[in-house]
Image (cartoon, rainbow, N blue to C red; front, side):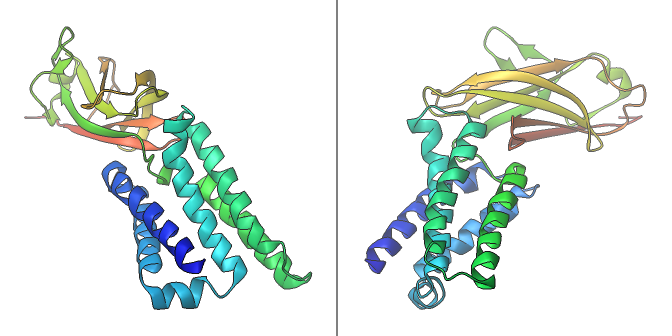
Amino acid sequence: ARYATQAVHQETLFFGLPFLLRATDWGSGQALFTGAVALLCLISLIDPVYFRYVCPRRWRFYAFHGLVAFLAMQAFAPVVFRLDTETGYVLALATGFVVAAQGFVRLRWGWRRWGRLSLLAGAVAALWAIQPWVPPLTLWMTRGAISQSFDREHLQPGPVVVVLTPAELRRGVYAFMALRAPLGLKEPVFHVWRHDGVEFERIPIGITGGREAGYRTWTYKQAFDAQPLGQWSVTAETRGGQRLGRLGFEVRAAP
């Protein structure tokens, strides 16, 4: 039974890891979460580590089992139940908690039981708090561009720009992103414009899954700060703050 469960853990983790690697925004805390999942993959793969540190203690085994269930539900919920990313994240947390809690039922009453139950509750609260650091397994940006022109008929951006002057900026800027989503999924997404890391504007858009090359979205801005010099970024984010992709450009006083 232990070997069969180990096989399930391995298959689930290695099934989800490629999606995580594809969806991770490596310039954010998502890189830490993906690295942690890669570590779990190694633990499940190395028998001396798995059977010595995970299996002997019932509560450790079910805690590991709960983490795997949490990751699996994130991948399955948007596809099977047609849930948006934030609702699927809540369902994944609830599933992981229920699965992990089974390992704490038979603990004897005392400070150890309460301590481990507190640890479990804290882990669930931490996963809720770091939701922006958890890459959505079923959503990612396939391509994107910052441009000052856009073909609205064919939904294609013009030449890519990375540096603009204030005079050029007043002509307006397009942020184009193609976002990959599962067939049938309808997801509320935001294009978040930031100036030197400070949120400037949040523009809601909606995407529909199913297009292999990604659902094409764009936003256009012509109104900027009185002092627009500096670094600008545009990120696609879910309602829970999970980043799907990021674009950037710089505004300089001279070309």
